[in-house]
Image (cartoon, rainbow, N blue to C red; front, top):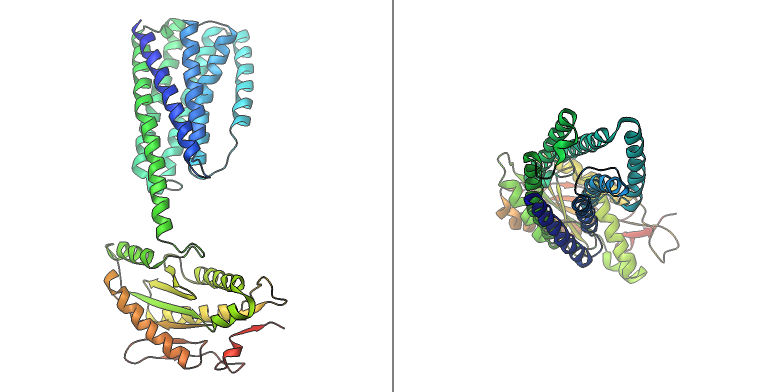
Length: 410
């Protein structure tokens, strides 16, 4: 009687949280983060336990076959939901249907060849292997796809590991004592149901917490980035620098300010859509041109910045010149233009600065160098500080002429 009450409460928890997951999934814009699949997993497991209550005990029947299929299909649904949560767009109904058909066939063969004990032992062993694989996958995820959720993943791995251990014990008990070990009021089954009821209470709120955390992180990331180029904005740069300089091994950084030469002429000649395409093109080259770990941002209009971390001044100058040359040499295919365009940039470089509070001063210094570069003819790299140095490309055209800042390729 106590076991039936526990299983009934477990079914109620699963059904309630399934409804909650469905409601949440309908409110999530675009990416549902697997919440709809988690809801299906809860429904499958609740249906399996309802069939177990109706069945009353081990038996060979269609109801029992369906029960076993649903019991294993539920964790598979949870696995598919987790894959969607971490960004992999996987199908749900096809793999679940294929699995249920295959496992139902396997049950029929085992029952006919080895008897009912073997069929129930197969269920316990299959669940053990499945949950073991899930635990290992979750732990491995802390080093790859779930680095930002390390503590949560370890917590889930421990819970899943508990189910794995209980199913392994169930397998051993079936092998030793036959189907008598599966009586609902046995001590082991009571422990099993208590553990599953505890999981049904703990895991769903934990999943909701993960979704809320992802939404919060997404909103924070949106607030820190320029929507057109996905580069950091001023706030994002400041936050990223604060995080970097708070690190134990932080070293001084250098700042580059890039400005597209004669950008107004691009808008006037080809339209604002072409101007947006040029901005995105330069942003892509900037992102590809810096090293991994450096910071890139757009501070407004046609002006970009790059923060070079753990660099020497010679490396900074080489990278700045490489960026300038790369942008000058890459053609831009813009809407409405018969031929590809090219643009140039002027780059101002600050002296090295210490701490996030030095960003504003570095920006002022790099801006000053940028304006000197503009006044000196554009398409060049100029360094700020008391004794500015200059890198100027070998001009093939008179770069001081504004009309040559953007020209068709021939």
